[in-house]
Length: 276
Image 1: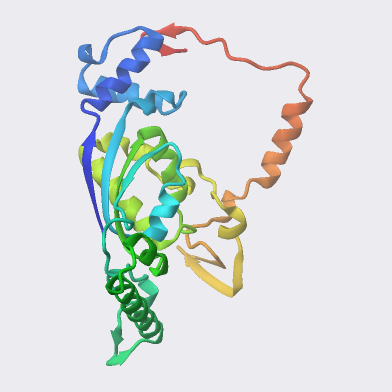
Image 2 (image 1 turned 90 degrees about the vertical axis):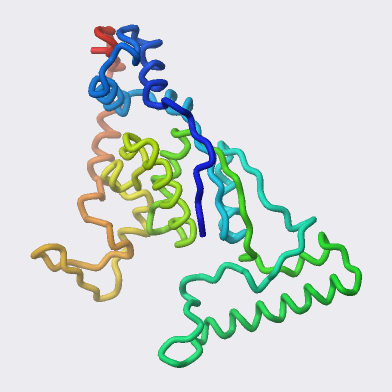
């Protein structure tokens, strides 16, 4: 697997700060020091998220499976261009091997999962090549190829979309291949825009709550974990913590919110490029 950042919005931090200047007046990014720009960016993290849609990233992702790209393209706010299997001949033996099926040889013996997986790939590839040799069209012969067949894809996302994706695609509930791909995408972004780190965090880190509490907070049978000096239950997600469960607090707040007689509202006043 390899991820390359092909294109990205230049001077993105300055652009973001200037979108805020449009809303709030104040100094432009060009008139600010680097420290001032970052202070205004940190302020923006706690305001409306639409400015982050102005910053784009285009990735080239290769050595991944079509199972992964089927999931990736479900992010409908992205744009994609993918390698074709309709017009190109492919090699089924190059299919992406799940980590659980690797390595093929361990402790001098063929691992059971890997043996079945490789044998199946060999059968599929032999039949695929036979169909082509018999004159079958590539677009028809590909129907027997495995869904983990290798592919490459270009994908464009804006920073707001990437931030939303990070919350769930860095999560332990996401399949490993997608987690790895998104970690590499995140690394590429932070190489050019290190200030984007707060926007590219898994949900539990970004919000303090589990994105999938029914899964993450499920107790394992008779398990114990060592958390510092505290021995407690083992959760299905190794990063889950009991304080993430705010069910009672949220229910109390719900009752309070909907029983209020008056609608509370802010009265923002812009001053020095910020609303007070």
